[in-house]
Length: 290
Image 1: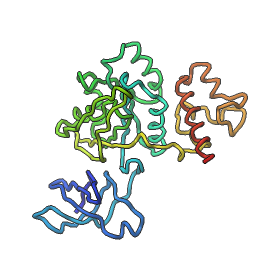
Image 2: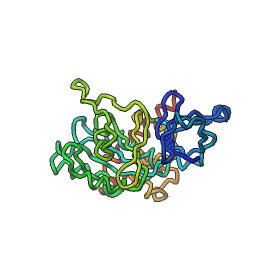
Image 3: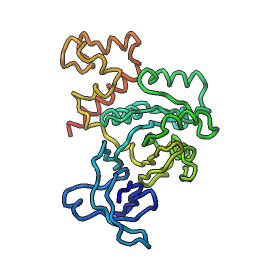
């Protein structure tokens, strides 16, 4: 029997067969082969107790992609969420999530939540950073503004929400999947950061036939895997100038006759995107020293 792992806790996996949710454990062969089952895996399942709805997972189907922190697989779309205010947007961190999407060939959508806390001019400035690269949707999970547009963007897809804590991901999921009833957390007055409310990865069926991952831990993602030589390729607005610089191995930092830095001066690459690229490149370089 085929099924989808929709949740995993303490070595137990909850598999949706389309008829029931079966509690299952993986065969020992997975551990022997160094394979960790993950939420989002399509699996071959054997029922061992129909009354108790228990089973064992015999095999997994090939994965489209996989992520380590948190362990989820087979993502179609990344909805990268940040708040227009409270907490203040951290675009360098937002761009890390976008790099992660690019590295795994996952389409990305930018979602600016708490749009009710920002002026139209502020929203216009946020849009200007990304709208030539990714779809940008401004929403207010509190008032419902923009949520229909977001629902349309994820309809029929397997989508994961990523973003810093406190930006309202759980509230958005409550709107996309009303039966999910996610716990939502308040913002810490001291740090202006949200309290962590999601403890494990889980998939919910969304309206429109799609599926939504709720995922903790993306903020721990490190971009070391990208490497100094490849980071530029995960910034589409920067990568389009690859091969146009004087030096073939130009990293677009201090090299002369750099097409990327010229494009920044000309306003063809947004200044904040370039500053994010430079900051993330510096992080990669510094972490290589240790």
